[in-house]
Structures are given as structure tokens and as C-alpha cells.
Image (cartoon, rainbow, N blue to C red; front, side):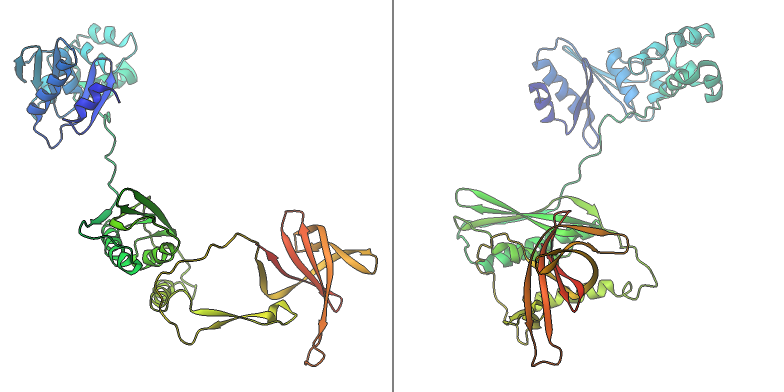
Length: 427
């Protein structure tokens, strides 16, 4: 941004430079003449000897008023040292353009070279004479260039000099100076109020956001932390669940003296399209709200993992619903290193496997994951033999193979009673 534009933006909300020596300023909602005088004075201070300004409702009328440099009977002019301001009364744009020659429109739109001689040949020399014609006869005689000049002569200018104003993103903040906060529960209390204000603003506009940014003001610095959701939402309860989980991972060097919450990318929220014959379609929203309320009441840990030393993987771990749930505040979470986790299928899937002999056992080289998909096995480590259950109703005897497929997956296959099963994969 140059020095002139920066100075002009202190006076006008929006300024655009379209061509050499031509500046546009948006004066909607402002006092027009004082604004034009202030802008002209700034341009004069930057070294311009003579400045001309035009004020009109339509862009073409304002441009001609600025370029002409002198008022006409239809316009009100104001002249000072080195500055000429021409204002076109509201609704008089077409009448203002009428006495000017057609060539003044060529500064805005450059037609074909033969259009102006054709217009002069039939006696059309002014904008008023051109605007008095009908669109059909102009189009037949002078083609598309003539129609464009005809529209400008009628003060019909479709140019968009300024784009739409960017919509402000909802934001809420709170600051305090008498004390500083370190307690997580007190921070959550303040964040809950701020998130509620942001979500109320989003719901009033029928919109949602995928991310919220938390800004913690410290004594000598500030820390920002983004929180992201899987889909756009304006539900404060959903955001507070994510923020509670995030606060356990945030480490602040100093106490907090202020908080701010700002929405990120904003999108409209539409109802999800579904099948009216789907049994869960009518109750999906109610179910989602019920689950969210349950999570807010009982916390995230509503089930517990019960692990044993059983040889079979599917019997070794069980998820059990906790009978009593104790609500706990946000605590410091331990750092978890990234690792592969075995994802077991609920029930081992029967698959067709092609094998090759290797010493005293057969090794899988390919298995059929679906009717049309064959998966090639590059490496098969095993077998890991597991047997037992003689005291149970159904004894077991399995050979496990840890396999790497051609597409880079790590899967677990086993053979039992001359049948092959896909037990799971690592992710």
C-alpha cells in the first residue's frame, strides 16, 4: 500500500485506483461534499497541481463530472484553489450526461473505431441524442459496441468498483487487570460465556464454524490455540467438550489476564438430506442431542477397558459401561507417543486365501477381501500358534500370520480348522 492510498483510507472506508490519474472512493452513508473536499486536499498535499472530483449515484456520471472539470446547469459545482468538485443531484445522472459529446464515454469504454463515425453520420453527437434511441435500433445499426455506449449514455453503469464488504467473524473477549487466573475451572467458566456469545451470533445468522481460536492474554505475551470440529456447528455444548479436552494439553508459561474467542471459517448450516424411509432419519437430531447431553453430564469416560490374559485377542479385552461416573476437571494429560494400534473386527471375517508351502506350514500369498478385490501379500511373518480351551465347550487351535499387503497395510490373518480368517489390521 503506497503512502497516498494509506492517507486516503484514513478518510474514506474504501478507495480504488482504476486508471492513471483516476481514484474512486466509496461515500455511501457519509457526507459527500466534506468527504470529497478532504480527499482532494490529501491529493493536493501529495503534489498534484489541480484536482477534480465528481459526486454522483452512478459511476459513469461521477467519472464524467470529474473529467469534465466544470459544472453544468444540471450540476452543482464548488471551486477552490486548485480543486474543482462537481456534484450531480440524485436522479439527474442521465440529464447531466445529456449535453456532453458521445466521445466522453470512450474514457470508460473503448468501442470499435468505426462506431463514433457511424453515430456522427446519422446526426448523433451527444449523449442525450444517443440515449433517446431505442435498444433495438441501436443494436441493429451499431452492434454490441453501440449498445454499450447507449447504456452508458442512459447512466446505466453495471461496473462494480468495489467488491462486497467482508463479513466480520463473531468474536467475544474478556480482560481483567486486578488478578490473574491459573485455575482451569475458572478459565472454563469465562470461556463458556464467551463461546456462548459467539455461538449466539452464529445461530442468529444461520451459520456455523469448523474452528474456534482461543487467545490467552498473558502478562507479557499472548498464546493462541485453535480448536477444530469435524463439521460446522454453532452448538456451544459441542465446542465446550472440545475445549475441555484441549485445555488439558495446553501449557501456559504465565497466568492468564484476558481471554478472546473468535470464529474461523464460517459456512451456512443446512439440514442434512436423508431418506424418509430410513428409520433413524427422523430421530437423528434428537439422538445427537441426547448423546451430547449425556457426554456433558457424565464426561467422556463412560466406558472402561477390562483387560485379561486370555490367549485369544477377541476375548482378551472387553469394554464395560462404568456403573458410577465421577466428574473430574481438566487435568494434565501425559504425552502419548504415536504408534500403530491393532483394530480388531467385531467378528473374524472368513476369507479365501491362496497359500504356498514353506517348510512345515503354508504361508498366505493372496486373499480375497471381496468378490471383486484380491489383495496380494508381500510379507507374511509367522505362524504364531495358539491352542487351548480343552476345558471349555469349544476348544481352539489357530495359526496367526502378520502380513504386509501390496498397498502397504499391515493385517492379521489366522487359520483355524483349515479355514482362513481376517482378524483385523494395524492403524
